[in-house]
Length: 380
Ligand SMILES: *Cc1c(COP(=O)(O)O)cnc(C)c1O
Image (cartoon, rainbow, N blue to C red; front, top):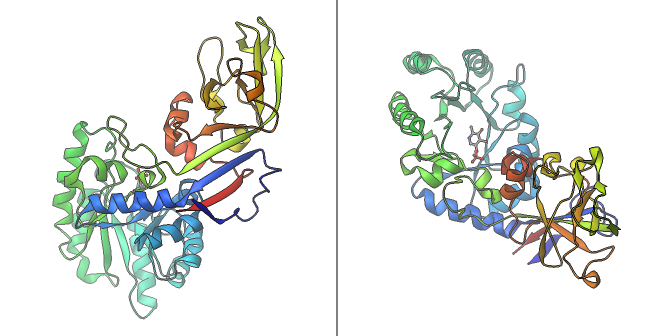
């Protein structure tokens, strides 16, 4: 791997950063190609909301474009603007729909809102009457999330009014609620309901699958799939192996190695008492960097692990704002010293493993990846 840009904008130099976040854009591109292959005849879009799940919208979008992606989904208009700056010809959908009063800006950016309610549809249609040329937009139909989307009954009403609309829907979509649990009865129900509903819009391409849909439900592909987390190496279907390559690696700088005695406590609230004389590596990253506070350990529960000198070591006590404390008692003294790195993600520790220790999901670990790290982007 060679670095394509040594560090991201505003990212500190490696020597002065507490942590080094390495983002493997070759793995991202490879994950996209793998998902595209699985999608078969369906188009494979890429979901890059949330700053591309925390890895950086611009570098991610550039790599995905080179890997063949031409349709992107973001959540917000501002994300669409950032994306447009690096992908001048891509098709861009805004999942959160039409921000009130902002239709002109969507059109200026050649961005399509995903319209999920009557007020949005009416506002977009009114706007379309004031401009010449097309105003394509997607229509979201709710099949079970109760979040975005017209109800199935309202979708039928809309289908009956298509000829009176001034704009032409470019996509009809819905979203799976339980795709990560392949056996959940809701999947088959949503897929069959969506199949029926999309038939009301026979000239419009249809999209249902997220990452888990793409990996676990072949009958959810329709005309376009919309993977997000799987692109970034996340484990979309926990009951199956993860076929994706990890994209992020996080190393924290050890600021000191110290001795502590059995019976002493470590960290805030003194919730962890040492059971043996210990050596503790103090490493420079904490919850202000997105390391979940809940990933710490106490007398009652084990915490997450880090890799130091090639070996797995446990976090000791609570995660602080800027620091974590790691049990390195079992590492020979000569092999761990101030200035060395402790790996929190990578070398076999996945975002999902860290998330599980913190009672959350890989998505949240990814999207919280901190802003204080030296960010290194590497291409293949
Ligand atoms: C976030 C999102 C996706 C991508 O979901 P993943 O589980 O990350 O693959 C797809 N569609 C919609 C509507 C979303 O909000």
